Image (cartoon, rainbow, N blue to C red; front, side, top):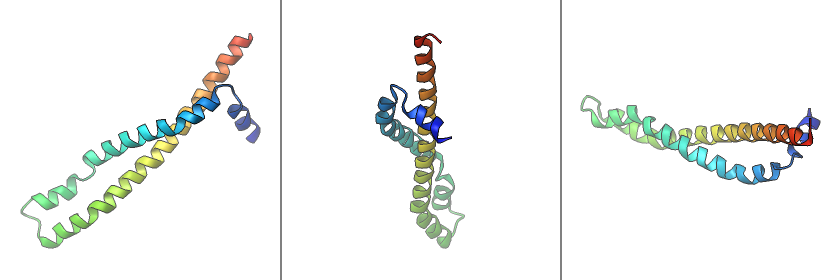
Length: 105
């Protein structure tokens, strides 16, 4: 199993993919964080703005906001890592196929 992974990492062009991986991860992370934050606080905002919620519910909503923000940011970071790894391995496979085609088979 580790031999196959080493063969993928030794493909030409993988050094570029490894150098670009943090940039790709950062773009994915920011995009997912924005998307998750956009709809991730609607229930807490509703507790703050609707008059039917009492004081303790509003205090709970305010205290949950930073925790919710950290949880959504963490989920976006983990998802970004997994997506970047998947893109990297797919790129390695495509580079390997292209190299095999150029070599004649």
